[in-house]
Image (cartoon, rainbow, N blue to C red; front, side):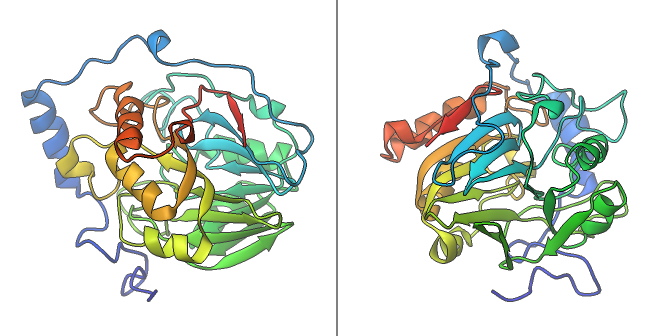
Length: 325
């Protein structure tokens, strides 16, 4: 793949669509026009569709030939693969926001307390949005897990190092790094970055493909719209025994379609990736967009069935629940 995701003059862009990020004018239209003139779906009581259970991961480490995933919430999972303990997009904050008094509030507490984590060997960061990258969480992890190695997309190492992370490596799309018995590759994603008004596209965004020496393969999509490179990811790094796929934050479609897959698109991506088992993520923790909070998994399960995929391959987890393959 060419470096067309590198923006002329610096920074990054999506190579497949004209706009690399939703424009601020679109936010105004969404919130002040669309949000006030169209009926919004009502969210049900969280107790009717969200559960929290006790985790069942192995500590300090699982056997090298075992694969397990424990959903902490949103896009944060504890993976046990190739004898390593791996965190994805660690977010333990109460709000997905730059401030403590406003912004999307967590609907469910984290499925694992930060202090209850086993020894973390590897942290995978997909991008720098507040629902995926939390300042206080990074600082706490840097203190509690000082030996963890962090893999981040281009441009994010200074953020991590400034908060105490000792071991961090930046990767561009398609670059790989060996960590213990696992090969980790940064993969293309269709999204954007930014934590303020002046840094849109200053750092890269990505997904992650992991291959253990024992043969098991896991894909973490990060945050992404549907793009044409899922087939290439499968050809280079698949097929995948397990995929962690985002299914939420997709309405209104005219605004979100280029940066977030809807449930049907997530299943389409799974088919392109050759996925055997899928865990739906990026739902049920923070309310970010207009769809009802309980809608994404219902639509995703229906799309999985409509695609003729094995019924036991769709594995929706409760917060804290551990799936062992």
